Each structure stands twice: as C-alpha cells, then as structure tokens.
Amino acid sequence: MPSRILVTGGSGFIGSAVVRHIIQNTTHLVANLDKLTYAGNLESLASVNASARYCFYHVDICDSGALDLVFAEFQPTAVMHLAAESHVDRSIDGPSDFIQTNIVGTYSLLEATRRYWSGLSVTEKSAFRFHHISTDEVYGDLEGTDDLFTETTPYSPSSPYSASKASSDHLVRAWQRTYGLPVLVTNCSNNYGPYHFPEKLVPHVILNALAGEPLPVYGDGSQIRDWLYVEDHARALVEVLTKGTVGETYNIGGHNEKRNLEVVEAICELLDELVPLEVDRNQARSYKELITFVKDRPGHDRRYAIDASKIERELGWVPQKTFETGLRKTVQWYLDNRQWWQRVLSGDYRLGRLGSDL
Image (cartoon, rainbow, N blue to C red; front, side, top):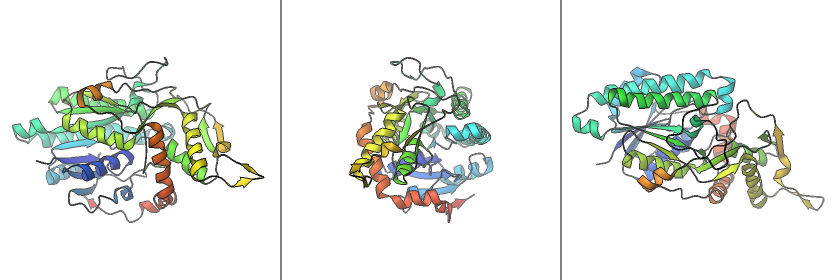
C-alpha cells in the first residue's frame, strides 16, 4: 500500500527534489507543507503539480493549529521534515528567523506529529516514521586532512544556522527517547543541482558569470566541502525513510571533497566551453578572470567531509553522480532554464502563489 508522506519545506531546493523524486519514481502520495518564504518556489514543482498524488498546504510549521488540521485531513503515514532557514550568511546577519523556524518550528511539528501519532492504532503507530533532515554543519569543522564526520561525531556548531539545526536534531532524538516517536535523522553534505536558490555558491557563480559580474570567493577559497548532487540526496532520503532503522542516524555524502576555489574554477571552465566569452584582441578570455577574493565570513569552517559508509553498508545507497558529471548537468540546466532563475532574480516567482491555505 502506498505511503502518505507529508513533506515540510517541499517547495525549497532539497524539498522540491524530494517531492519530484517521490511523485516521478514511486506510487506514494505527497502533501507539500510550506510557508513559502523567499526560498520557497512552487515553480520548482511544475512537473508534478498536476499529479493526483500531490497536494499543497500553505502553512507555517510554527502554526500548531494549522498543523493539526493538515494531519487530520491528509492523515500521513510518514513525515519528512525539511522546512528550515538554511543560509549561513543570513543567519549571521539575522539569527532570529533561524531560531524561530529551525528550533521553535521543529518543536511545533514534533508536538503536532505526536498528537496525531498518539491517536493511531498500534499497527499504524509501528509503521509511522518521522524523518528529520539535517546538515553536516552541526559537527563543526575537521582539523585533519583525513578525518571524516561519522554518525557519532560530537556536535560543535559554528554559526547561528548550524547551532539552530543542532538544536532541532536534539529535539527530534529527545522526542523519540521521551515519547517513543519513531524517528530517523540524516545529516547531509553540501547539495548542488537544478532549482537551487541563487544565493548559494554554485548558482550564484553561474549567474554572476553569465552576467559578467565578479565571482566572489571568501578568503583564499581553500575551504573544503563534500559536494552531493541533490537528486542523489533525494533518492537517499527516500531509502532512509522506507528502509532505515528507527532511531538511527545516517550521514549522506557525495564522496566529492573540493576546495571552494576549485568549485568556482570548475564552473568557469564549463562555461568557457558551453558559452565562451567573446574573443578580445585575438585572445579568448576566461570566466576565471571574474574571480574576486573577498573578506572571509566570521566563524567560517575550514573543512567538512562525510563518512557515508553506514548508509551504503546498511541500505545499499551510493551517489550516482560524480562531481564532474553532476556539475556539468547543473550548469547546463541553468543555461536551459533561464526563465526559472530570471523569475527568481526579478521576484516574479513570488507572484500568484496558489495552494491550500489553512
């Protein structure tokens, strides 16, 4: 029997990839619950919007009353919690929204879930899952060049964003230990791919380069991240939800450690190939000439790297995209889908938002 999956934040970058994956590759039903902040974009779900297995609720996860109505109407068999404020720079400039959404919102959702779950039959309770999607940033950074984040790495968040996500992780685990709520937690590395909001590194560099604008790189660009293609991540999340062991944590990584400067240069090289700049005085210019080093942000972690052996060993998941194949597909997507990102840059994507308001 198909599951009924409630996805919070399903209009965001990772959330929309999860919704698209479920509708296009399974028989499950999906309810997308999203407040539609600046990063929520219903146009990222155009390919599944007409599906009879998809519905949308325009709801804030901090609104307990509205959450109760959604649970009563949709009657989910699982929750995938992705709704979160997620941009580190924004969390440094204004932490309040991160505390409210990521901590208070997670608490409100946990309580709404617990009220609903408590009313289920014994069989339904046993089958129910609450899957909390988190980040590797809760672990802080790694000092050694060979060290990896594992599922038991102590938490040491560096930014208001990562501290708020660490707090939400702890709440989820406490609700299992205290109330018996059947939870799963995943911590992922840096995602990239289609439909990524332009404030993040990869789309920001692509769009700035196409506009001939500077490509800002923090510090000397030596910060190392593990890069995970978003569609690989979506597939992993559904594997964890449907096959993972209750109470367990699974780290999800792309096996692609790259310095930030390497990422920017790789994007430039792809753009040089796909949309070369005009020849100037018989010398072909490169997008790399637009790279500009800027002052590093406060508390910038130097290196993240995921040990994803547990999810491979226990669930058989491995990423299908290498960094090279995933980045090429990503760059090409932005070249082929100019209308999507132009509407984001202009703000037009926020006009005429439709859906069920509770």
